[in-house]
Amino acid sequence: MSGAAIQTKEEAYRLFDEAVTALTTTNFIITEKPITDLLRCLVYSDQLRTFIIDCKKGVDYETELATAVVKTERGYAFLLPKSNKRLIALVTGLLHDFDSGVRSLTSFIQNFWPNVDNTVRYRLFCENVLLPYKQAFHDSFLLEPESSDTSAESEERITISDSVIENAAPLFASLRTVLVEDNKLSERRRESLIEVTDGLFYALEKGNVRIIKTVWIALQLALEGNKKAERKLSDISDFLALYILI
Image (cartoon, helix red, strand yellow):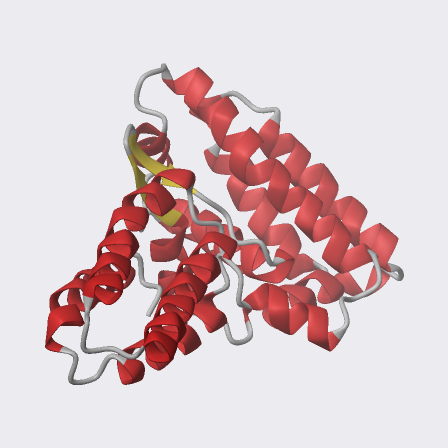
């Protein structure tokens, strides 16, 4: 049977669905073949292969992978992108890494779910990575494509954990305090600077990378030459850079 024999999207998706289901229902110790089979089906069907190529356009895999790894109070979490196509590009790349030996599936699941055995870790991997991958694939491949405006917006959004927001809050509060206590600022300028500072924190809460970068640039320009705020601004800069947000 050749790829050309698959005539419809539904037939192509069924091929993918069977392969990913086989992977999510297998025993952890025998995942090697199901991973290979899934990747082969993505190449086997012309429609699936074209779709994967489209998902990868404009997506830097290593950057997505680094962004997905978020430090929490209990260790590290792996958080998938909000955008379906970025999610698909990321997980497909990860499966390629497992298949080629570039990364170890065992090490991966041990890093993110350290306090349980491998059987439970793999189940959590399926629930948190593979099943969302399957759903994203279904929605983007079978359903109507997103409008260009919605797609562009979603491409700029990421999930930022509550613990990251909590760690950022004191940094913004410190800058706010400096601005409130700076008697060299006019009341109008003080209010404007505080509004931009609060706007940056709001963008961080929403996980909108484009707005974070835009407001960050605006805040830098607005505070240029303000020696009192310089250190606090530097702390925020280091924090945002740490999580690859600027």
